[in-house]
Amino acid sequence: MRALVTAGLSVGLLLAGCAAPGPEAPVAENLPWSEIEEQAQGQTVSVWMYGGDEQGNSYVDEYLIPAARAAGVTLRRVPVASTSDAVNRILSERQAGLTDGDVDLVWVNGDNFSTGKQAGAWLCGWTSTLPNMKFTDPDDPLLNDDFGTPVEGCEAPWHKAQFTLVYNAAAVPDPPTTLAGVLDWAQANPGRFTYPAPPDFTGSVFVREVLASVSGGAENVPAQFSEADYDRLTPALFDRLREIAPSLWRGGTTYPQTSSELDALYAGGQVDMTMTYGPATLTDLVAQGTYPPQTKVLQLDEGTVGNASFLAIPSTSGQSAAARVVANLALSPEQQLASARPDVWGQFTVLDLERLSPADREAFAALPSSPVVPTYDVLSRNAHPELSAQWVAPLDDGWRRNVLAGR
Image (cartoon, rainbow, N blue to C red; front, side):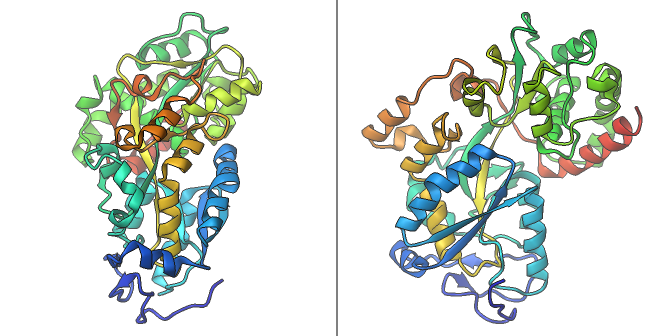
């Protein structure tokens, strides 16, 4: 672990007036970018990110780390089983008054971001200083709110995502076109469908999608959580999930614990559908023979939920200058293009292509089209925003009590 500094001392030139740990996070000084780059020279940044995304890890190792090195920064990738592991470490360090902790950058969104923000775990007010933010749309709602939590300069956008159901067209020649139809199909085809058990990220969003479906549409579920709305809307949700449980894989007696486990069931032909927040990776999975050749994206009439993922700097980091440099690199057209390539990571860019140079726009336009995945514009048609992060834990807990324990 790096050298520790007591809570009352300065965190460094980038932080303005950081007091003892509390709910208010320190705010980054608005220094000229040249000064930030100068401070970053020779610093080492530990980026904590989900270790189960093999393509994402390879992208960081092969593209982002060399780019950081060229900028004078050493980037070290720290794989974690769950983003909450990083958040818990930061909160522990903040409670202990550490100002040079083990975490310098986190791939984060949703409930983890909200939890950290409430506890003052993130450095805020720094993203507007990133030169490459000029390539994003300042009015893009996916970049301004993270599961209903205002971003407010506490995290830099990295990629967009779209929840997507995936099916094997050889086994499902006439697929349903609504989520209600998917549930009906699951009951009519016992053992060929399942979903990850919440709190797995993908399993949780599937439950929220079913909530929208049984409520008559996403517009009928208030974005902000209340006990009254939970009590009013969730009985139909849990009833429907209990109804389909006996028809799921292994009769609903067990569920995949992670989205990776569900993907493995699909790849092995044990189920005919899977689901993902990163559909652009499907192209490579089919090309490599991991997924069946007839793998297709299931376009739902009502659309699915979309969001963005971000890079956040902990308020306990002593390397925040270098972390800002890395976040700016990750936003560059060069890095966004690399991560968008299906053979690299296949992520959807957060950049507004109209704000790019003609050469960069042409480079994005030249990305290979996929026989599996529609373009983002098509995939995100009728998309709806995430519910606030305050919905997540109650729904996950309610699923455990009413569906898993109630089977």
